[in-house]
Image (cartoon, rainbow, N blue to C red; front, top):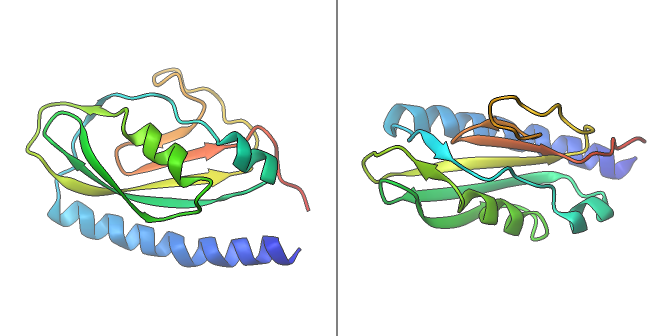
Amino acid sequence: MRICLLFSLLCSALLPLAAQDKSAQDKSVRLPTDTAFKCPKYPSQAESMRLQGVVMLQVTTDGHQVADVKLTSGHPVLAPEAIKNVQTWKFADHAPTTFNVTYLYVFEGAFKRDRVTKCDAKLELPSKVTVSSKEILRF
């Protein structure tokens, strides 16, 4: 019960910051258009640990693809999968840029597969990705 409360407080504190960061980002940086990507997966170790969390990345592109990724914050079990996934992204031609990406890992049950992206994650590319475990966390 305490863990659930702590997670809720953490998310409620981080999500407004992510939203503020995104609004500031939208004003100063024109985000590139994703043209190709692999569907993100919930890390199996995190799933077995029943671990949820937020991973924040700073992504730099070379005008076509991801050139560099820096971990801004996130659990060490969740972060590698987010970094691995963002490195698969390709973009329409654009000026090289740097922007922030937020990955949310949650236990909300399997999301319905999107007909366009063919992914069962919620993709708001290139700024936000929500990945849910097939399980629903109950308290």
